[in-house]
Image (cartoon, rainbow, N blue to C red; front, side, top):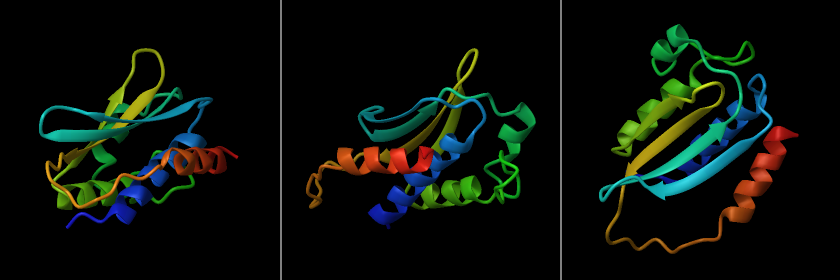
Length: 130
């Protein structure tokens, strides 16, 4: 079952990872409709790329992109997103920068009430970068 607090933790972890990555001076978070059936949350930074060898292994666990991390964060994220019937992907941009995309099924009819999370996200980004 979908647990909003778990998704919030995943996004916070991606922001934290971006904030401590080499060369990062900008982080953006964007939510959007990916297609008729999926919504996405993208966390983009302008830092250095992750090596191809690491990218191939980092969602399996035990392979971190940081010397201070355990390497389980992205593997756990992958498992949680799969349990939500979603996924996580990585797109590395030409030159520098990368985007982690969380995709989830769009919900046509939900009892969830919209919330103003913009201020919360901004505060969390400022805390992660500080």
